[in-house]
Length: 143
Image (cartoon, rainbow, N blue to C red):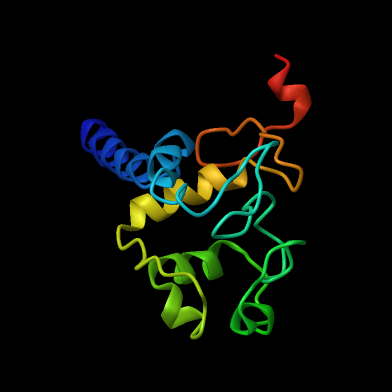
């Protein structure tokens, strides 16, 4: 019985870790985005806006970027769920967006790019990320 319980638990844990967010993998996925977007302390608006501090920010508000009226007027505050819908099919989520990217269809890649983007605060400073995509407090990072 104990072996059966351990086997079930091991199977469950392996499926959980398989779907966890991976910032390093997300950085590789973000390579597809670099043609238009930048992140980090030296990031600048390009074809698309800077993506520093994306989560919690209102769509269409990066200073100096010429957004479409659709983005400016969408009323979207970026969170994981909204970004997930958007990045899967940008034109379906915000009809009239200027973003020409066809979307990411792989849920794991979406999880990973979310973990990658969450590392960057509004100034582009990169926070340490724990497994599962949670930011570590500075006190924990120093250990």
